Image 1 (tube, rainbow, N blue to C red):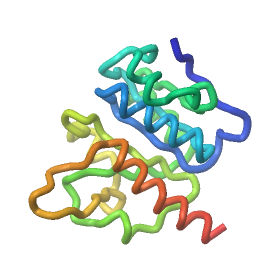
Image 2: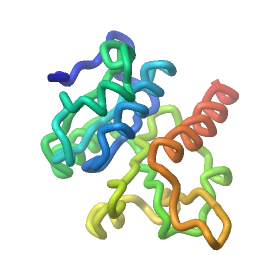
Image 3: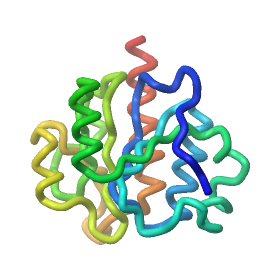
Image 4: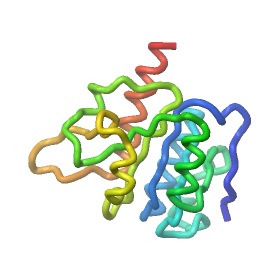
Length: 166
């Protein structure tokens, strides 16, 4: 079973946060992405699968041993940690008109992505300040993207901005 671990040097910087993820393959893919870019993933429990799931391991491949991630027992534990760390919460949601490409990301942002089956509940949604609720614009026929694709798109833009500023 995977155990929460943080690799040396991964404590600071941009964080990828998954609210109660449902699909192990998506989480494995996101952990692999994070390992490749030296980022930490925060998994807000309960997840819809065990962290030793075969699909998680298949998607994450051998990168899982190099992935820095932290499990938070629930939303309240995550929120307490985030506030203690003075990190800004940036929520990706379909309930916003503000494009992620029109946002100025900061190096210590927590990018929050909701559960594949239903996003985040209203109580979590309203925790993010309105100007920090972002969407990925798409055609009217599109409802939503796969969460792993969404994480990759937004992370790429955030890292581009942060690296230009640094």
